[in-house]
Image (cartoon, rainbow, N blue to C red; front, side):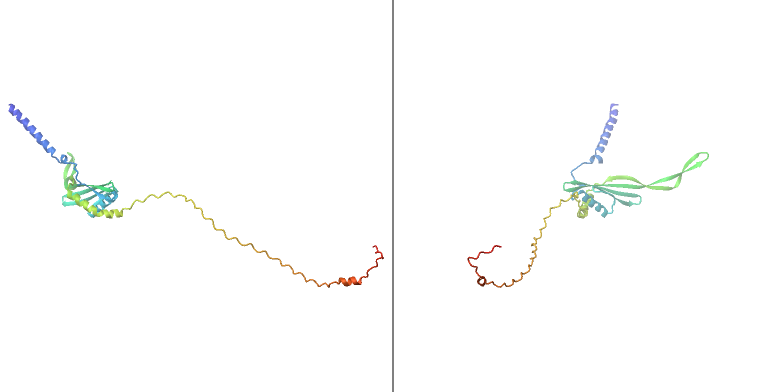
Length: 245
């Protein structure tokens, strides 16, 4: 009796340990943050130039761009492997500064859709039973997401970054350099102008010289012979008194 009771307990413990081992080996617990660079690369240039190169890389491979910013790019591409199946690949890229270079992160998610058929029913009113739902002849087909997983293929990301390097020079040349801010205009201080040279002093005008009339030539005055006059005048006698006027 004791052995029969102990046997189910041992089987239960073995079952639980087996379940715990499977949980430890699940995909979520196997995820590790290693030091690999599968999902990131350091590239030359600024984050805006790196994201512009990523956008051109997606466009060159037929991806539809859903978002394109200076630090993030998102694109998707559709696939139809079978008539009743549909797949979509979504790539999300982020760009961050790393010193004088840019650090590019990428993550690819693969979504799977399947075509599901759902029969359409119609309600028919019956007097005795009320409303009765009967199957309708046609079916509605719709795509339903059946799986979604992150792509972990290292070669897939390696090919993406190799293609990205080809567009970096073009992105760098196409991205305008930031324009330095224009300083506020300042009122220029007028420089002192050199004094204009004075014109040479004009020589004083010569005063007109008054022309004086030449004096008339003096008439010749006959010379008086005082000796003759003295001879003609009689000499009064000494005794004769001089008359008083």
